Image (tube, rainbow, N blue to C red):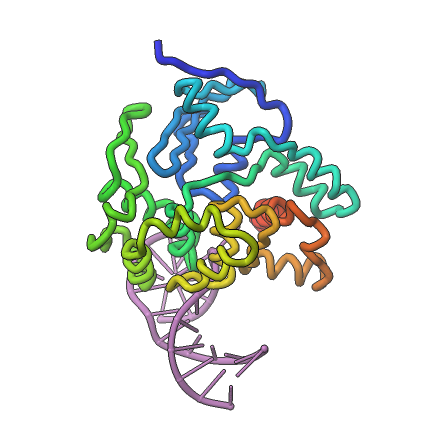
Length: 269
DNA sequence: CACCAGGTAGGAT
DNA sequence: ATCCTACATGGT
């Protein structure tokens, strides 16, 4: 019998919604209520107990607390954020559909690469390209539900390689450039303050305003970052009539953005 | 065969 | 500073 940690996460947590939120590309429901989450070199099998908020993380207690608690931001009270959105009808509706979304702490290097790939692309195809990169160049981590799981390739594993099977198109050049960077920068970015991380990210080829904000939010957990993509721009124009200021949600604007992105795409279908 | 997809770089205005 | 457009690829 494999080792597992059972936890109860009743408030503001939904693996399904997170997997559909578009902030990560390697969280997948492989069977009803069963997910595989992968970030960097870590992977875990998570089972949601039917009709409850109980989850089983198939990993050691040590890994749960050191990796997955920060990854899913389990120590943060998202209901406190939601309570500050009560006077916005769109956000209230968004909470109803996507209130279980969290802002993940993903591996920074992986976040940079995946969001460079995301530009002018669609989410299913981003996932496909990322999986091919992992399968081609990443380390084998083990088997989950009969499927081999591979880590996201390290910069060293990707350096000098030809990732043509991932069909990255014109973004392939940018990914190769990222792999050539001194890997220390991903560490250094963690300890930079103020606007230095953003300036550093913007200096990278293929990283512009929007992708930089995504990396800041999903990789560096800068909760004040508010990435504006085509959906957010449409939303602000058509729903808010160009009258929306993310600064109003100081300290959690990025969470507001995720709720808006998730819900607006959902009702568009 | 058009058009679109979590944009960006480089050049022209 | 703001406005264009090329940039590959795959899916409707």
